[in-house]
Structures are given as C-alpha cells and as structure tokens.
Length: 103
Image (cartoon, rainbow, N blue to C red; front, top):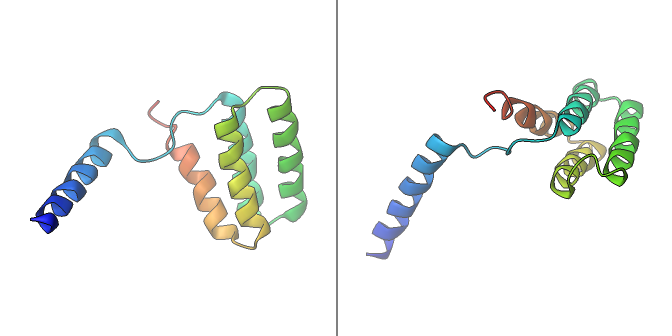
C-alpha cells in the first residue's frame, strides 16, 4: 500500500511539472541581463569575466535592483563556475534564460 502511494505521488508530481513547469520562475530584467553575462563567462570559462559579473551582481543587489532569491541563484552558479564546474554552471544559467521565454 505504501509503495502505491509513493508511485501515485511521483506520477502527480510528474504531471504537475509537465503542466506547470519545474524551472525557474520569472526573473527581473536586470537578473536576466546578469544571467546572460554569466552564461557567457561560463561558456568561455573566463575567470575575469566571471569576477566582473560577480561584482556587478553584488552592486545590483545592494542597489535593490534584483531580489534576494535571484541573487542567491546567480551566486550559486558563480560558485559552481569558481569550483571548476563550468559546464554545469553554464547549463544552470541557460536554464534560467530558457525558463523566461514564454513569460
């Protein structure tokens, strides 16, 4: 019986994701621009560009132009890139951009 409930839960979750999406919610225009710059830095594996994006991200957050949530997402991607996980970081940045297409 417990396995049946678990299976049903997984099916419900999968259907919900198919209809509602499981990606990133809408981001601000500033966050979108930062995400594009971050994707470029990660795609090129450019540490200097990555550092500039991090600086702009911090100043943009301080100015209140992006939310805490958006800042955390982008910082997590920057941390991945700094750890040498360039491909994974680029995929995450691209996912944010792709999730904005139909909004």
